[in-house]
Image 1 (cartoon, rainbow, N blue to C red):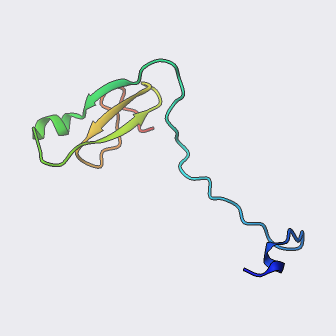
Image 2 (image 1 turned 45 degrees about the horizontal axis):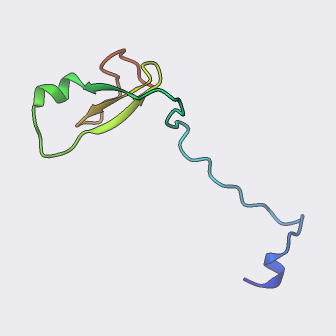
Length: 79
């Protein structure tokens, strides 16, 4: 990097940070609800692959699935 690259020249384009994921874990004082496994994951039974957690804005909790499911098992929301 040269000295001219380090200067704050207003004529140069600024580098903007990518905003990243839009959803964040809530910063509430209460505990996070465990919404359980989806019906498909329950039907499969124990598997060697661990389930992934997904956040539901409506239920304000985490539900789990072994598959790429997108619906909350409690409210059916796709958030």
